Length: 85
Image (cartoon, helix red, strand yellow):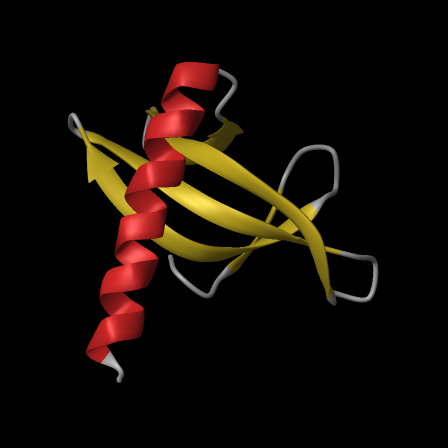
């Protein structure tokens, strides 16, 4: 799903920058896009929810989980950045 654009029910669009599985759940790190699909400076963590074969992305609201995801995605970014050097 990385690099895909997803649209939430509120019509806001995000490009998925990274994904990670933690405790058998998938999480995504998204960058919000404006009305012209240009990047903004707003980011959001999503949790993947599966229901009757459908897949939904819900914003993560738990502050403790946000902290864990921030650390996790930062480590992913640093690993990728150093691999490219």
